Structure formats: C-alpha cells, structure tokens
Image (cartoon, rainbow, N blue to C red; front, side):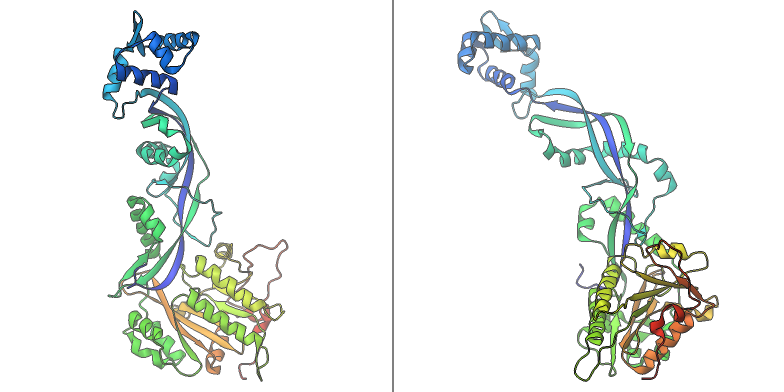
Length: 492
C-alpha cells in the first residue's frame, strides 16, 4: 500500500476465468530404469567390461546377467564383442551430449492437465480458490468473440505457457526422471463453465490529488504483466461508463446541513482531500454533536464508529434509557456504491449491533431503481447479508439530482449520517464521499424529512428482499408504511 495514498473507496471487481481440461502429447526426455542406467554408466566410465566382471560387479546370477545383457543388446544400448561389453555408438553419443552424464531417452508422452486462464489477457492462472460468483461484484465480462473462441485461445495459451504449467505441476510427478520440452500436439480440449475471481480494488489520491488505483499485492506482483495491464484498462472502461458531474451540489449540501466548518476545505466545488483527511487524523474541530467523516461508510474506521453509536444507543446508561430502533441507510445513485467486501462487512456489524437488546430491529437499505429494473438492482445485494431492501425511483428533473448524490443514515431520535458523493477532479466515474455523523435535532429532522419524501407513494418502488421469498410480498404504498420505525416525532 502506498503510504502517500489516501484511500476513499473500495470496489470488488470480478475477473472472468475459465478452466480447461487439456489432453496433449508432450516432447520429453526420460531417464532409463535404474539397473539399465547403472550398467550404461559403468560402461561409459570403464569403456569395456567383461561379462564376468559385469556379473560380479552387480552381484547378478548367470541367468540375471544374461537376461540384462540380451535385453539391452536388443534395445541397441550396448554391443557385445566376444566376451566384452561396450556402449553402442548411439548411447556413447548420448553420453557425450548429456549435460549431467545421464543417458536421457526422447519420447512422446500423453498427459492431461486442468488449467485455468483469465478471459481478459488469456494468461495462465495459478491455483485459485473456487468461489461462487455474486452480482454484488462488478463483473468484467469478456467480449463475445473471446467466449466463442475460448477453446482455440486455450490451445494457444497452453502451448505458450507450457513451461510455467509444467513447473507448477512438476512437484506432483517424478520429474527427477523426466524432462519436458514443449507441446508436440493437442488431442482434446474440454472447456468448463466460466467463472470469476473477486479482486478488491482501492481508490485513493496521491500527494498531487491524482487518482491512485490500488490492486491487491498478491495479484499485482503474482499475475502476468499483460493481465494486470488489461485489468486496469477494463476498470477504467467501467468507470468511464458512469455519468460525469460538475459537483455543483457540494455547495448545496454544505448550505442545507449548515456545515460551515467544512467550507475551508472546499476549493471551487472540489474537496481538498489531503488537507481534510490530515486534519481529521489530528482531530478536526467541529460543532458539538457533529463528527466529520470521510470515505466509504463501509471502511473499517467508519463502520466501527457507526456501530459504536448504535451500541451506545441500545444499551443506554445512567439516566439515559435504552433506545431501540431499526436503522435506515439510503444509498447514493452511484453504480460503484456498496460493491464488495467492505459493504458486506458493514452490513454484518450493523446488523449485529441492531440485534442487541432482544428486539426485532434490522438494517434497512433504500436504493434507486427505474420501473421494471427492480430485479437487477436487487441482485446487486445478493450474498451481502442484507435482508431489508427498499427501492425508490430516481428523480427525472435534473434540478433534483443533487439529492441522488446523498448517502444518508438515520437511527431515529439518536443520530444521523449525511454524506455527499462528489466526482474526483478529471476522473469521470470516480467519486469520493465526505460529510458528518450528527446527533443534532436539526440534522435528524432534515434527514427524516428527506427519507419520507424520497419514499413517498409516487416514488416508492416497494420492498425487495435480496433473498427472494417463497411467497409474494404484499407491497406497502410508501416507505413510511413499510418502515413503521420511521413514524416518530422530529421534535424531542
């Protein structure tokens, strides 16, 4: 990890892979059986050996010595001159050409390997753990021509990567008596079902405020250079598909939530990320009951801080009663939000905190979905542990799109989180977030009203559990009807 990088988000991308069972003939050399090799090496050292000398040296009986000599003479390995043995001309030449004074014998060997290739650069992958793919990952799907021609590509890749494949598999075979020199011919290729490998990528900024894409060390150092390059290119392509924004709503966000203490970090419509993050690390001064936040709410620091607020509210204290409620979390309208292991970890820790106290409280997430797109949006939350998902239709009027850049969280009557997602300068599709966790009544009222407005009847798309229930769900008319824990007074 680059120590100069300030990370603000992590996204799990899915690398497409495919395993192939390949049967081929390999050009190889092998050493001869031990007894045969020792006889040949003796003759190579001594030049000529008598029949009696050979018998006595190895402790053979007359019958055993005769059997060995006849077999080797028949194979053209030795020649018999009266009562003396010597190497045949062919094997004498083999000893001369051998780098280790062993008589290697050329052959074609049939072998079957199961190898995996990525479907971006078609490089050989080392042993990978089989993980069931989930739609929560951003899948870097290969093009149709790659999928259609995968068998031919696998043949070519097997030939080109055979040395590496051979080195990996050598430990499981008796390689000390065999040397392989390449693929002579490929007899059959069976393609298994394509799959994916999750790779979690960090996004941050360097000292100059430029984008830094952080790949896992084991992937960046262990994968083929061409794969790493292609993987980065595909990530950039995915990011560029996300619509660009001018960040004009940053000023609106600061005005609506009266966050004047953050204004000194905003230059134009862009946050001075380094200055803000560094001051937070040293204890940024903020109004009472307001705590500045930066980056993904799923990051370890943020999720643990929020979970602490939930636990504190639920356990109560001296002169402070327990406050039990569910938690509402509104996602921003951003394709790369909540995609990966950090979100899954946040769902787990928030859900665990909300189960303390013995009530039926839970984590509720509200996301955006156009009409008839609900199923695809729901699938993004598969295997994240989320149970309660609500959908709302995005605003049509462009003037209202600033609210879709908001990420909100509300624990009724106790605390709220308000984050704005702004585009990193000159990086379409890349967004960082900053904002506050607040216990101030004004902020709780503002977020509460926004959630109710977002989930009113004309916009509310219904409850869509990520794990599809066996029976149809009777849909509520609005978010307020579906989430009765939101029915509380804004005035304490």
